[in-house]
Image (cartoon, rainbow, N blue to C red; front, side, top):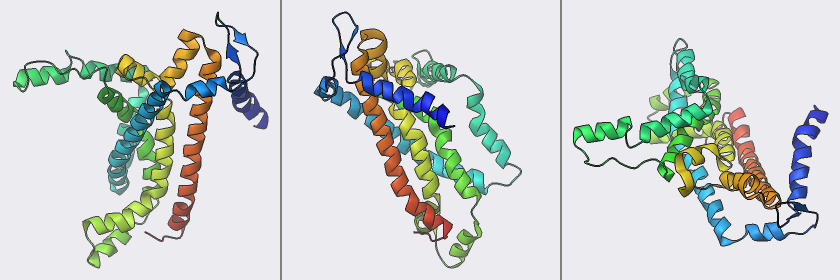
Length: 274
């Protein structure tokens, strides 16, 4: 295991870190001159806007997945044992198809000639098709539909181990609605939510395929910027510097989730809500 991690995790990261300190020559070649110029360039306002857009899209996607995933996980966990495998199977059903095929399917649904616009035009709600592709909305929709299961499953695992008679007892004592959610359900779901946030936010922050296929040139994210530097511009050192910034951002988020998650996990083990 140690050899495997060294060859396929630590080794590539060391190479990327090394390349980020080098320079690109006039013809795209690598110049072995060590400095921090690539990191200084990465602080240009042009690239800072890309970072900000990536963070906003990743944050909004994660938030929407959390809002949708919590009730979905609760519904599955509280359904009868007979229906739980079916509901979980429906949740995972899209993963039986290729990832790119799923993204293209969303693009076809949102297209000017797609079913949504045909329905709107046919019902008379609009006289012109809505341009929904190549937009931040299309990218967010594509990300939510593809990453929602990664939010639902960790929360479901937490709910599945819980004795829901505590909620019945709270109702018998006069608790209703929001107090039950705030003091019992939400603290219970917190470890699963934290795991789900890590599983969604981290890969979405570096997502390349969905923004490229659904957002076009209007929605350039950090993953697309890195790919552009390696494949089109042939500026490997600068692309490596951007990749290191992405890696450090992901590690920071995972570390933060670990710090937040440990107290929540301890409370859950002790069955202390709130």
